[in-house]
Length: 209
Image (tube, rainbow, N blue to C red):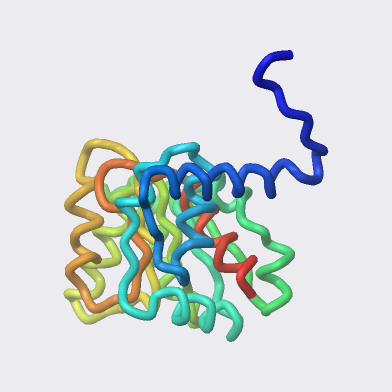
């Protein structure tokens, strides 16, 4: 069939990354070497080359994130979809777990009683874990806003933020809160992102170890 190439199932991912590399070359886009595995995996997940120009990394971000993982940090996500997509076995090799509190009944009840979002309560639960945490936010800008409010109040400062919520309401300003902070981050500037992107970034970090 015209245009169809035969690729063994075990080779599909490798071939996909080859194509991504070729297309980036053809566009004249050069991604910094240390960022390349993460940005390319995000493109692989989304088939969206805009990420090549919108992904933002704080200074030393990848070294900081991988060091946290190697020291047993947990991952906290804002959706069960992102939680499902993260390689939990690989994370467990370093002593880490993935948490998502958003669907917990007691979180929903507390959020309703206090008239706040479940994301707000979830971030408070994460802050109380008592260990190093990497936040992987792919859906709720409120989660980023809540983390920043806790910082401003002197209650909690996250060690690392992956901020890629998607959408139209408060998404861009929520990301900018951390782009303008001292917290280490990987953030996609603009409206694009999603739970799959958050999981892809975490997995890219894990696969680099």
